[in-house]
Length: 413
Picture 1: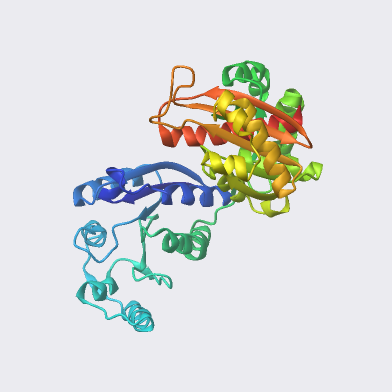
Picture 2: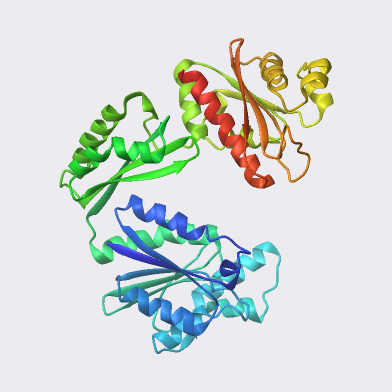
C-alpha cells in the first residue's frame, strides 16, 4: 500500500520548526510493509491544504495529515476539511468530557478556544486522543482514507501506533511486506563502491534494490526487498545480503543498521573493552552520540570535558610544556589527553579531541576547522590532524564523526 503525508503549518515552511513527524511516520509505515511515496509541506492556507489533499488522492488511497488542529485562529485544518467533505461541525460530548477532566486534573480552567477542540466535522469518525485535547479525525469516502492528526509529536505517535496503523491494516486487508538489511562500509568512496558492486546490482531481481547512504568516511548500504507476505521475500533478501557481504569482505565493518557510535559499541562489546572520552572542542558531543545507543553503559564509562587548559593539565595530566611547545590543538596534546582519561576513568580505550570549531581562533598554520584526534587502547595510541570548514555547528558534528571513525579504524586495524 502506498501512503502520502501532508504536514500543515507555516512554522514548517519558514524553518522555525523542523518536520520530524514525517520521518517518524515513514519509519513506522515501513515496519508495516507500506511505502511512503511523498511528503508535502503546506502553509496554514485553505486553498493550499485543499490542493495538497486532492493531488495526493490522485496518486494514493491513504493520506495522513499532521498539524493545524490547535485551538488558535491560524489552525484552519478542521474548517478546511469541512469544506472539502461538504459538512458542518458538531460538538463531540466524549471529547468535551475528556478535555474537561484533563484540565480539572491539572488545575486549569478551560476557555472558549480549548472548549472548541471538541468541535469535529460531521463527515469524520472521531478517534479519541487520551494524550491531548485535539481528537484524531478519520475520513473515509470513495475508498480513500484521510486521517487528520495533531502535530504534537507525542500525540501523533500515540495515534499512529495505537489507532491509525491497526485501523488501516483492517480497512485495506494489507499483506505486503518491505524488508531491509543494512551494513556499514569504510575504505571506499561512493563511486568506487558503485563500480565494485555494478555486477552485483545487475544480478538483483526487480523487487530488490540497493541504496547508498554516504557520510564522510562511511557508507551505509541498504538492501530492500518488497513483496507479498509468505512469498519468500525475507529469504531472498537474506541470500542477496550474504552475497553482498561476501563481495565486500573486510570493507564491511558492521552488519546491521547502526549509527557510527552504535557500530563502535558493537566492536567494543565483541572485544570486551571499555571506553572513555576526553573532549575539548566537541564539548561532550561524542559522549552524547555514544550514550544515545541503548546499552552503552556496558562499555562506556564517562567523559572529561576539558575545555579549559587547566582541566587538561590538572585532571588529565597533560604537560604544560607540551602545550607550550606544540599548542593545545596538536597531536602530542590529544595523545596525552587520551592516555590521561584512560588512567583517570580506568578504561581500556579512549577518544580525545582538541580543535578550533570557529568561527574565530584560527591561524595560518591551524585554520578554523582544524582538529586533533587521538585514540588509545591499552597504552597504544594513534593521532591525526584533520581540517574541515568554518561553520561551528557543522565542525563540532564533523569532529565527532571523525573521532568515532578513528576509534573504529583503530580497533579494526
